[in-house]
Length: 146
Image 1 (cartoon, helix red, strand yellow):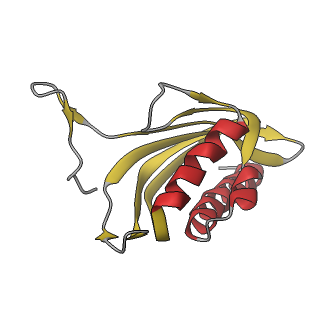
Image 2 (cartoon, rainbow, N blue to C red):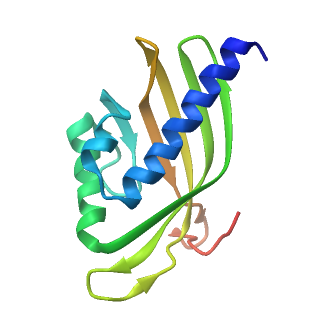
């Protein structure tokens, strides 16, 4: 890997770390700085797609409203980095204490991030979060662990 690619990969890994930090701190403005304004998000909640930074932040606002204390962890990040686009995937899990006082260990989800480089900054242009589902029952399978 070239030195240039190593620097870019390190910057992208820092962006993922900032996502984790932003979620744990419930920092909407910090999260806003990580996404492209025209981000398209295929999140776990309906509808099928959330278009634009306002829609993405609305999803995080919902999460922060449900949780008193929130923790997010990301595992097994794999990146492929090009000159001005990159993608990565891994597994994420939200956990913490809900507003009603109940503790939740959350569930592991599959996460994919697509980055676009603009003015030497890597921003998330697309993300997708999903859970596997059982074809026979049509129900999500939320108890898998990476």
